[in-house]
Length: 179
Length: 302
Image 1 (cartoon, helix red, strand yellow):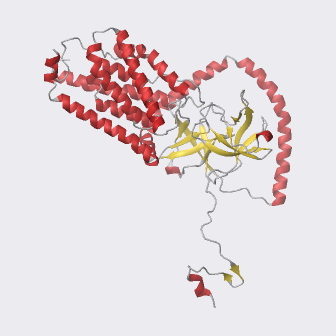
Image 2 (image 1 turned 45 degrees about the vertical axis):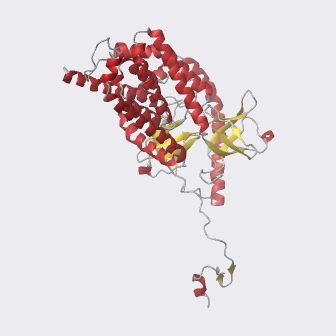
Image 3 (image 1 turned 90 degrees about the vertical axis):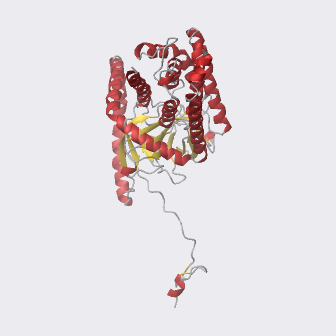
């Protein structure tokens, strides 16, 4: 049984990496060369939050850190800062995940909203402090709002398509611990 | 139950916290290193991109093609309207073509009379666009030519008609082009026919504004903007676009390059100007006057 669940654990970890690569693949497609003043959601962060709240063992800190850093590097962001803040936000969500399990989806959504807004704000404040030119506020705001609005959809994909659901109380994780 | 859980995590808990602390330190360190020594980290970024993106090309090319095909289908729906427009435009163009042909012949005659040789070193490499910047905050594209093809940072990039951007970040197989619309792009330009010098300063909009115009009164919407070659990095005389005034009265450049379809880009080889490295020597009838610090020419004197 341990062997089987170990395989599943690593499969799901690889599955999250694959998901991030698919998102990056579609963002990198050379389709949008004219600047626009709105933008879609930050899918990587949204999915990471959804996975962290459901199955924290599928998205260990090292995998999150690596994938976020890769996203930073490929998408021309200041490397490390967004990754650092997103990692801290996700770890925070993991800690709260147990207590959120009993509340409904609205509580979860609200918590994610708070965390994502905090990450975005902290990102802008730190960039301003180290005198890096800031992106236009409208762009940042539209990214933030679409991420928060589309979060239920990401949860639906996580839950329905990828089969990542909350552990039932009393269920054992791969290492044999009570979740 | 909570107590039970904490006791079962006796070993993993601290270890996990330690790992998290290390990860946070590494990520924060990366950011600080980037802030302090940006070129080194940007080179690292270019190498990572170089490893990953060309490997995705086999999948990216068909998907991009399919999406563009779909977009074309959408435009076919307006086909008859476009046809009518094109026909009327074509009539106007024929008059222009006549004029252009006559001018071309005249130009060739004059060049021949003056024995002008166009700069033979202004050659180009054509590359295919592999990927865009991936985020709406930056405007850049990735080309499939790189250091392997002799590309150097700072070279100009054009599509068939106008300037598109500047090479910034060269890896072995790929190179990144910062587009004129990117917020960090600054290109010295001349507005013709008044000859006013200005900066085309990208600000993440489709039409970058003109900054630092010497005398804005002399610049009118419709004037041509071409690169000036100031600073010695860029070749002079590349078409950038036309001046246009936005509703706020600010002068902007409507870019000549077709940013909707950047597929093949030309990278112009630029060999720079000869730097003046030695100090001035006074030339006398016996040859150059010797420097006090330089003993070699003294041996030549009788």
